[in-house]
Length: 465
Image 1 (cartoon, one colour):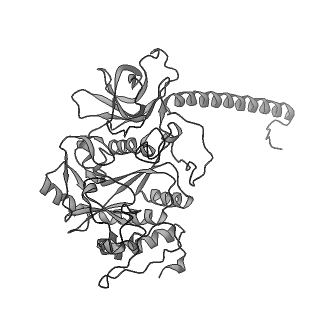
Image 2: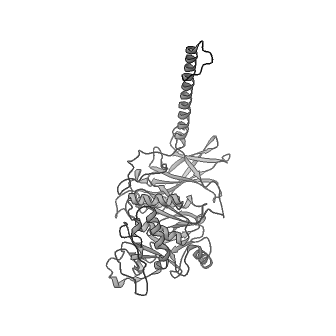
Image 3: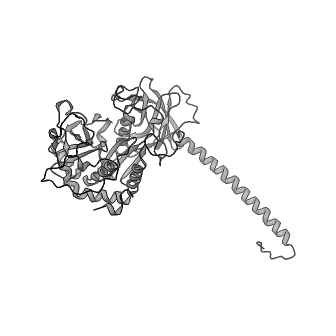
């Protein structure tokens, strides 16, 4: 018997009483849990960002990569405006929230901001400002400036609607969390953060690992990757570094809302937004780490800024601040190392043995000859390191607006090594210039890459010499 009855004269009555009570308790709990879940879900739906229809979780060229975070992009009803993120702006006289967005440039930019302050909702008129670097695409990056009215001291979320929308219709508004609640001037979690944008159909696993290990040797603490799609092996590597705490992957799904171009000009690649939405990603990264990192570097995964007289950015930045003043943006000359040229180094230079032939991607240690700098491109395609708190508007190469401007760094102090397809494909091998600076890092780089490839299962144990 599963019921213990201390009154043997009425066992069936006891069993019936116990059963009825149990059914009543279970039913009550079921109703309570259902109501609680429904209520919580309703509240959450109002605060979560737009959730487009999920794609099949694949991660290879032409498909969306599996996303491990919620989508953050919000479509504004009745407008061709797509909200990326929201940040409190502490550097203006007027208290504001800046909402980063992708907008149709031909559309009138007229917005209303709905600011959630504790249990109250405040409304202000938003002003949309489109960045000048749109490269003549139909869509461009914009900031919607939302003034914070008096009485809104504890601001947590913001929603943006068309100013023509009914301000009383609040039930379906979608809110973004407002980040950067506190301004900081020192004691940042990171010294150096690198913003990588954007990862689309990415398969270059070996160069990805080499670059991430090189960045750590240079003193970088965090790398932020805006990812749309990649190969399964690439995803495996991103997961590895994410678990280590070195990489943050931001799901970048703007291509679900706007027809993105694969190139930098409309005549070079069809689409409505410049190069996979690279500029709004860079803007978001700069704001995201404004009060988390002392410096941010804006460059691609196939680019490395290498000091020439010292070995790390920790040693380099004091030199730059002393020579060019602090709080400037530092611009580094672009040097292209064609990845189709594999000339060996001179006899005096020893190249350490590697066992990476079965790993997909480019081996940067095999490409040590760079193209000569030509006048037409000398001051183009550079990348920067900057204090993010002096930046107002970043772009692909440099800054559109900042507090103190930018300075060119002498190439003998530091320059950028860009291992990629040739920019001057007609050059003969003897016209390329040997630069073995990377080999100075190879003693530490090679075993570090081996460790990552082995621990991530991409390199068998027996293949390491």
